Image (tube, rainbow, N blue to C red; front, side):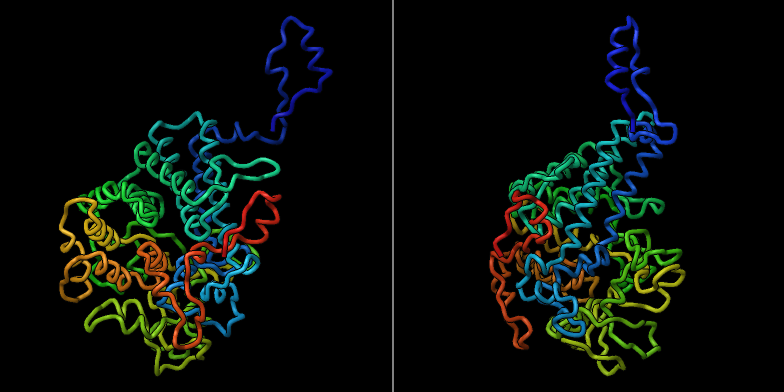
Length: 499
């Protein structure tokens, strides 16, 4: 940091006829100021990379297991929580039964994503110091930072609704205004639209930039947020974005559904955006998880004590078994059933709480998928998270057309997805598209939000016949309670959600 001369020296200087600004500024001999550090493209790119980092953290970060896709799915109707009993990852079990408490809620997600917001804000601030960068790269980096900020806020908004929102990082006492959910939505949309219109984002990433924000990813985020908000004034724009992706010809459905989630299916032509994880050289550890590496997700959600040894699968901890009803919902011949769900009934493993013998095949632990890691093997699986796929583009377009957003062949879009799955054509309606989304995205973090935005949550998420879920979802359960640690730190400025 730069240091100013003492007041005595300053007054002495003011008595002289000539006293330059350079004389008034003393530079530290061994430190570089932020303004001087972020003066070129390479340095601001470091800040941008840091803004991407928190995407990887929630699966194990802040001493909690919170893989983001499953944190909504456990509140829906396709998977159980599992584990050893109802106290194992107790926060999950409470969320599953709509009983989350301020001191028993996934606060790690809150911390991880606000860290991402902080880092995204840094890019936007530090860019003003950069002198050696082209206008094209400047616009691109700013757009990426804004989309990342919007992505982090989107998850917080969907989980907690009325949240602190800030676009410039806070100073002491680090208190931000809590906005209502509609105001948060407006800010998210403004960021996305600005990045789309002014950022020069590429439609698709090249191999050397896999994982970075693209225009297609921004279009998907825009559409997700608009549809969840049910902002029908923006449906037409969302539909046009989906058509632009389709008409680009840059994406297509991968022929083999199950292969999408294997190593050779990562960044296939179906992939719009993935969060990258790697095992080779990975150094994530229990004491240092906030670094580049792999994910713990496959270990969490695979059968415990797996000893079959014949089909390339590995051992797990027995969380998130798939419900029998989810397995049975697929019609005969639908390739998505076995691509999504592994049937371990008749195999040798240790059944745990809520066991069904059915497991999420998409992210199951597979032998060799944590090879080459250099720290804690449990944390360093190389399975990328598939966030947006081309099949969702098609289903978004079909649903928006059915909602009256504009012209187009909704049947064609819907049945392209069904044809890949090996099932017969059907007519596109809002209801049939929502049902198709359930079949297509088991375990991908879509179902819970679809039930809420379609007003089906209160009639679908009800007590089950097994005695596991005993409470019914209601509108006051739409948002989780804000973590008590955040309420305590807010000095009375945060209002707790009605839960």
